[in-house]
Length: 167
Image (cartoon, rainbow, N blue to C red; front, side, top):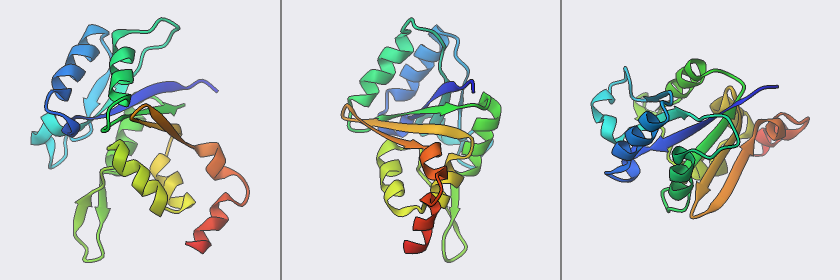
């Protein structure tokens, strides 16, 4: 199965991050878009999460070095592997931005923040994790040079979702 690598970068983590993102994506002419595009939060583009399609090949591009640097920081970075194209993945991630609260109001689900994603993994059931993953095969978070990976195949193993009843 062919797959594509994507980065999910939370620009709210640092004021300079959006400018850096634009620099590296333009330098390598990478497909990228703010997840807040077309959303009520669209005026917060400088602090929004961005999806970036990463280049293929064995040659490391400047964007790879930048992402490695982000992974060394406490705010981290997320790398996704998906068999789907940019637009369907983007649309899926946009649909997961809002969560309904018990009172019926909506809140922003900051799954794109690597620190928040790790906390979500502690409270979401395997079925909920699969729903969040959607077309993502692997969701890798790197914080302070440490990697955590959520793998779709692990959640789809027989019995993996049986843990839902234990939560």
